Image (cartoon, rainbow, N blue to C red; front, side, top):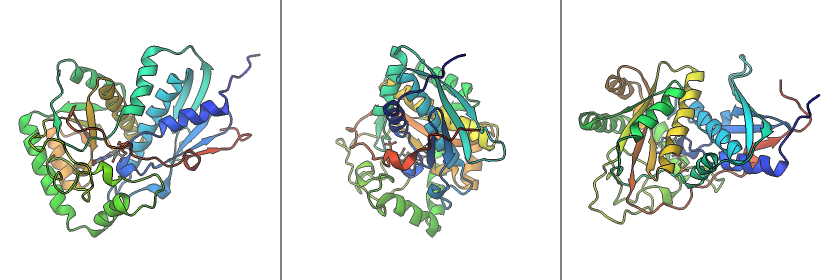
Length: 330
Ligand SMILES: Cc1cc2nc3c(=O)[nH]c(=O)nc-3n(C[C@H](O)[C@H](O)[C@H](O)COP(=O)(O)O)c2cc1C
């Protein structure tokens, strides 16, 4: 008979605390964890979706893929091997994964470095300098995408010019969409300190807004660039898939997380961008740029020119992690 090993409650809290540093659309954190004493269920929190912005909840599932990958990194950095199953209940699509720590292992340096990258990563909405060395990084990021059935495509200068036109078109269309506007305002300025949303300190000031042509048009914030002469020279990665099925989106979110953390470990700055894939016609134009695949999300990658803003808050761990000891998972 083998004796089941389970992590102690302090480790469980520390792991999920770290995992929930995962990025999500407007910092909505559309996930909920249930811990039963030996395994965790990851469920979509359907009270935290953004129907006007993310009509088909693609980004909600992507966000769950990101937090799933973050949790695996956090478990590994805490010295635990885990077993994950995705969509374990075929008829319950909100139950996106189950994660079970199975055995402890000695701490290993690569896992420690990746865990530390979770703590350092942030969304940099300011102009960036180009990455200093761009020889092997694209291959590594393509490999990370490929492991999760996601293509990572880098746009050349022509592609970036076309993308800027797509971004402008998206913003013009969105000006006629009051529901989109009120969601954006709510998640930027309307929240009452519950640890969600995009705070003013993470949003460019009125003077700096528009300096990154590809940035989503957030309400002006307080972040100021120290150098008003820097033009944005970030590289653009587009993550695309074969379809829009939920398991594919979960894979893509997982790949997004791997790309962001790898860049962070390399000392690069990143910002996830998605407004250009939220409306059908701009998305179709972007699909043409990436071989008629299904574009899901983009990442700006470069060297930071501005100091990091204060850490964007997260919801309290007790709001996202529910402990239900005594109830075994099916
Ligand atoms: C699926 C997804 C879509 C996102 N879309 C955008 C976007 O269009 N523009 C943007 O500035 N940030 C975007 N973000 C970044 C979030 O706003 C950010 O992760 C969140 O505010 C938390 O801040 P942090 O990344 O600094 O921790 C996106 C993140 C995810 C995971």
